[in-house]
Amino acid sequence: MENKDNESMDNLKKVLKKVERLEPIPSVIHKVLDLADDPDAPLKDLMDVVERDPAITANLLKTVNSAHVGLPVKVDSVQQAVAMLGLQRVVEMVLSQNLSGNLKRAQKGYGLAKGDLWRQSLAVAMVARTLADEHDLMSLPAIYTAALLKDIGKVVLHEFVADQLTSIQELVKGKGMSFVEAEMEVLGMDHTTVGGMIAKQWHFSPHMTYMIENHHLTTPAARNDPATVTLYLADMIAMMVDTGIGVDRLAYHVYQEVFELFFPDKQRIKSLMITYKSFQRQINGFVEAE
Image 1 (cartoon, rainbow, N blue to C red):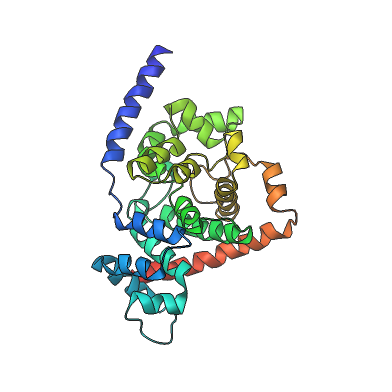
Image 2 (cartoon, one colour):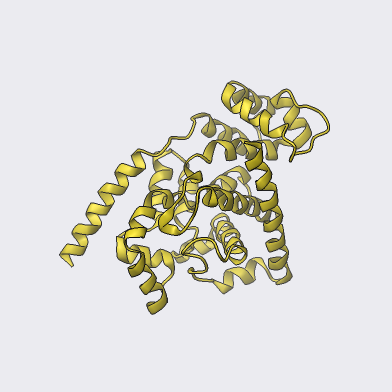
């Protein structure tokens, strides 16, 4: 037991060092989230924040003017982009472009090739936003961002998972553990707790950190938080569609009562799976636009 505790402590120290070395997010992202989340904030304030960052503005206009967006005229300003696409979509473009750097790498321990995690995270975020909108949840930008970053812990933990994958999979298959439970048992941490560490380092809000830490609903209390449940459901929709992506595919618990509460009509699950595939096609356009 002592050896295992020492190994867990060693792993934690190594993980913390890797967390510190992650590519930081631009400080402007926090300003965008705060303004987008505030119903009383003037639209001009948000546009001013984006326009004051030349790199973000340039990337946004490049995406807006790409062929996959299909606008009939060339867009020359953030204000024009908002007028033609709407505030929500422009905010999502800004968030996606500036939070994707760490997610684009390969995570070999999880069986994810370069770009896999980013594409899946982006599609999950779009489904989460759709669900949150349908259920009139507040803080759509925060839910979208948390969904986009829910698996950020995998970026750091994948090397440790690779070293212990056989042991983790034995617990999943032999004892019926979820992948995240097996990670915790073998490594002394899992990708959700590491994700929480990263969210705190990046100074995200306590609720956004909570959503990232609890998006698999392993803590019963999380099943009573609609925003966190939304992340879980969007993630499960992705797993149903992307059954061949990642070593942890379909290795998570299905909380039937949560599905029944959100989806009394079972056809809605099928339609969301179709929606997810549609979002994947849109994401291919984002990739081509870069």
